[in-house]
Amino acid sequence: MRYRTLGKTGIEVSVHCLGTMMFQDGCNPDHDDCVRIIHAALDQGINFIDTADMYGQGESEEIVGKALRERRDDVVLATKVHFQMGEGRNRRGNSRRWVLTAVEDSLRRLNTDWIDLYQVHFPDHSTDIEETLSVLSDLVRQGKIRAFGCSNYQAAEIVEAHHASERRSLGRFRTGQPPYSILARGIETSLLPVCERYGMGVLVWSPLAFGFLTGKHRKGQPIDLGVGRAALRPALFDPELAATTAKLDAVEQLVELATSIGCTLPQLAVAFTVAHPAVTSAIIGPRTMEQLEGLLKGAALTLDDAALDRIDKIVPPGTNLYNPMASFPPRTLAETALRRRPLTERSAA
Image (cartoon, rainbow, N blue to C red):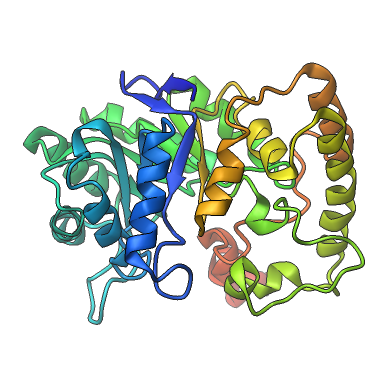
């Protein structure tokens, strides 16, 4: 297993990070099996685990807590805050009020006294960014978290957050967690360069393009929308969409490339993401022990320039064959009022 420093934190993490979104009811509900998968990953050299409070409404964190009872000191543990937890108002978002509650809940479920990396899962435009940075800075001083980062932020939002931290002498985001894969390379344009500029660590999610780079979905074959990730986001697998056709066409070429260099398609996909100089670690999210073992067999795989050049021809740099954030459009696109002048202004001479 290879290791890299997480941005400028001084914390060394494995190039493969174990994601635990699949450890919950509806994915892998067997807690004992999930614990075995976590232990197997640790035994193979992974020391970085990523979870979130909203995965199974806390179930994933509870499973991770069980698995780390005797191994906590050896693991860099990351979790997230933002999404609705339970019923009632003010049980979501990035406000001081909610973050202080959510971090205590996560600490309890994870059965730990500290979180190594506490990440804001999504931007919250109803909360001043200084409010969020302030409470996270307080949590670092209290020793409840070691560092904090952001997930699914756009480049401009990261820049804004860094300016706010400098203006108010607050702690700053040390990491970013965006989606990145061969089929979704859009972040190469601005987000990854911004993270490099600020010395941020980057842990990327969905390196297997939400299942399209597993090799299970091939051109001319029916896609079962009732199982796996296809069941979670069926819109991404709609055979009538041009984006689905484009992804399947690329998959055929990538399978041919993987075969030619003696690896599997998933191994090729993960190796591609960690070849970028801005990327610290790629999150792998196995549901089964077999999936974990298959991915870890390629942990030492390094792609040469010829392989990377071939990938660039299949999917050009900075190109998205699909939008991995389609279900979470930025506020500037989701809210029509931010894209249209009031009618009275539009009709004025």
